[in-house]
Amino acid sequence: MAASLRRLVSAESGRVLQEKLESWHRNYEFNSCDQNLNRCCEILELSSEIQGQLFAILNETSREGGQYAGVETIKTRLLPRLAPCFSCSSGRIFETTLTQDLIEKERQLRELASDQNFQLQELQEELTSTRLKLNQVQQDLKISRAQEKDAQKKLNCLNDYEHQIQMLKDKISTLDAERSLLQSRLARSHSPSPRHRESKSLSPLPLRSCSPGRARRTNASRRACLITRFGDIYDQRRLDAETFLKAYISDVEMVHRIIYIAAVESFHAAKMAYRQFKLRVTETLSLGHTGPESLEDTVLDYIVDHEDLYDVQASVNEVIRSINMNPKISFPSEIDFIVISTLIRELCRVAFSMQTLVPPLDIAFGIDGELFSETKYHRSFDSDFTAALVAYHVWPALMENDIVIVKGEAVTKRGALWSCRSRSRNTNRSRSCSRSRSTSPLLAHHLSRSRSPSPLRNRCLRC
Image (cartoon, rainbow, N blue to C red; front, side, top):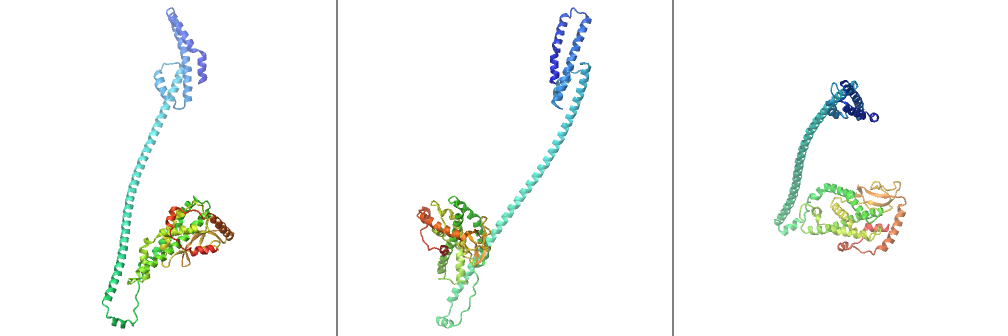
């Protein structure tokens, strides 16, 4: 297209046409009719030649623009000016070709528009069907949510009923005990004279049948619940305590040792508190015990019903004091083990409740350098699985009459016994230098009592 336009400009046909028109205009009055017609024919021939070149440039330009380029311009500006007798034969041929191309392009445009309309209609139908399906799904979801709410309400009502039934059972058992007490008092009030009683005292007393208390009847369910709580402490509370300690202590082994010692000392403190609590309850209830149950069952029922009287904060303080005094661990002076008091408090509560079971649950005794037992412990992921000795413990195992209920976790390494002895000497040396650190005011407020070191700690010291 650029070459054709360049040739048209270089030929100067327009200038020649303008000169011929000006010459004809000057001599029009002096020319004859034949001369004027000849001049007009010359100008028409030159104009037709220029038109033919312009139509050729127009055709090339429309082709370069693409299949549908320039259609609107040709329709609005060119076609209205075309006439049957316009231009020369070459112009007529180009006009016919261009008209056919325009008709073909219009047909293609109509087909494309019809296809687009058809596709748009299909998309609208699909959108309508999708909206209908979405509305149906939303309705189903609303129905399912309503059903879920109804089921939850029924479940809550069922739980309330079960709770009320249990409360009624407890009241019935309490009323039975009171009735038995009243009957025994009534029998004593209608007893015979002392002389007759002395004569009857020589005969053997009939054996009284002792029915199991409520604590023994719920022993299995409480046992399962406490085992689950012990596992939850290992999965959640222990990891939280590790996160708190790692902010102050970079040695992962020392963090594991601190948590293990905290677990051991928590069970020891809880067992000591349970013994003292049971002794006080026994002394109190033995003064007026006359019920059908044995004194031991009555004491156990009372402890189970009044576990909230357990002073868990005192046990937490004892555990923190024991950790500070333990020679196996070393820690920076700015750390206060009250940061893991949540773990210690939960362990003390679980350990105290485990003492009310029959038989009670306890943790396994473990020392560094002992022979690894597959029945008691899992190996930690950073253990040497070919080693036979325990380097240190991560979590204690839960036992019931020397039977493992829940496995603990331990780390095994080669040369664990020698590393344990060297670590103990280094720890004692470092702790003797840093033992003079001051206790935090918050901890000193709680640690006002002293207790004797636990047998477990004494055995560890002998090791």
